[in-house]
Image 1 (tube, helix red, strand yellow):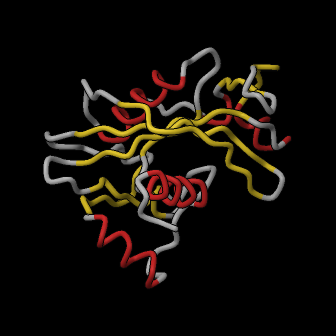
Image 2 (cartoon, helix red, strand yellow; image 1 turned 90 degrees about the vertical axis):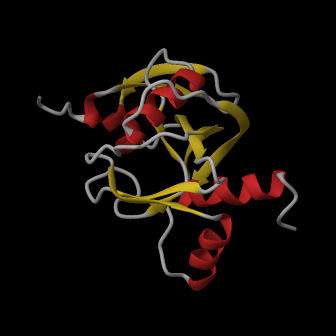
Length: 175
């Protein structure tokens, strides 16, 4: 089965209040640096470990970087929650995941930004990560993630790193 070109996917462009103002291809969003929507899920296993992965080297954004969230761009006309479930199921290679809303923020980097709607989920079954999206994966404790961040061992994807820090702040773990 041929993989579709992600740059041709339709994406909603939004204003500073997250209202849809246009629909264009993902490629155009990146070329013109238009504000759009993303959904991401922090997935834990039965022991509370976090699904952590390295993004595939051919990803449009953050190739080869590590992340503790699975997710991606919200398609045109798609809800954040539907995108979160779709992306989590695709990237983990599972069906039937249930997500819980966590928080939302506008991520901005070098004058380019997107709204990130963050979710959490628990998955206790096996995973078969999508090879077109994920290069490596493991289940890490929060302590192991903190160690890798402190040591600078891994380069984390910028929006995922900001989301991780916001997640910890909301739980009162960062000052």
